[in-house]
Picture 1 (cartoon, rainbow, N blue to C red):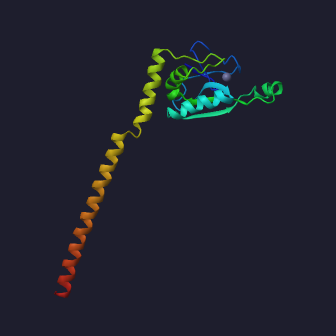
Picture 2: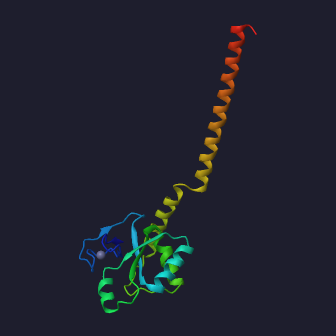
Amino acid sequence: MRYCTKCKCLFPDSTDTCPEHNKKLISDPAPASPVRIMTAGGFEFERITAALDSAGIAYSYSREENDAVFRAVAPSAASINNIYVKLSDYCTARELMQEIGAHDERAPYEPDEEEKKKISDAKKEEDEELSPGKARAIRIVSGIAFLLLLAAVVYATDHILALLQTLFGA
Ligand SMILES: [Zn+2]
């Protein structure tokens, strides 16, 4: 899979330059790279972003470059935005777009099975960075550290008291 850093679109490995920007494509973008999932305006934009919100998929958007041309023709129309999701969320977001019947005039990239696996593996790695198991382990370790500190304080206090008793013969 190839990636255009300008339009943030995905392309098959057989493509070398972005057909839209004539820009050289990079291979294997990072899992956190923003990828264009859809271009929409007005109600369709609201509908898509609401669906992403309720699915818990983070997104960002920016005004489509051709929007100025479009608005010159239809000044009252709502502006058009490009919507981006993280590459690691791309497959999930694509499925969601199909579920809600959101269509994009520019054919979105469909990863093949091998690429889908690669993307979901990258997603797993990302999720494991602070999985519930790991977070619990951290809590247990800090709990033990606190108990040890408490024991040390009690132990030291005992010794100081014993020392004071010896010094003052109490
Ligand atoms: Zn491009």
